[in-house]
Length: 153
Image 1 (cartoon, rainbow, N blue to C red):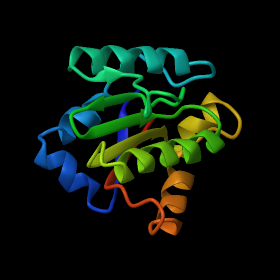
Image 2 (image 1 turned 90 degrees about the vertical axis):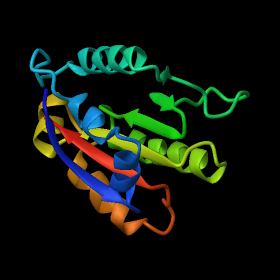
Image 3 (image 1 turned 30 degrees about the vertical axis):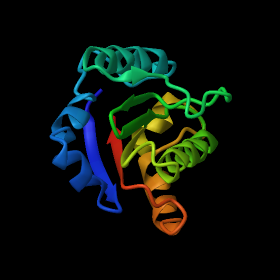
Image 4 (image 1 turned 90 degrees about the horizontal axis):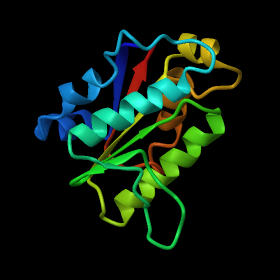
């Protein structure tokens, strides 16, 4: 697995750079031992969990105490979500990140998804950067959290 490209919505890139975490974020996906193939998502998630935990992030925190809704990680005023499943889950992830932002629990977020080519290898109708970025631009007045969309393959 390797980092492919980052897309910035509402100056999300500036927010991650301001915290000196932009390179760290993209380096999460420099994992040559993880091959993009069918049923590789468990390996990706294990890798992400280990990296977040080692860097002091809260892994899988709830967005609200009384709801079983989580994001992949939170650190200070940032949230991170990785999505390697169905495209419909990515939209749900955006809602959770936007909620955290509107509740002033975060100031910026990142969502990581495979490239279109990698998503096609992983499975059918998997979230991919092309589609998520296109839809983020369509809904940029609804999804207002400063965000980096990270793609990997």
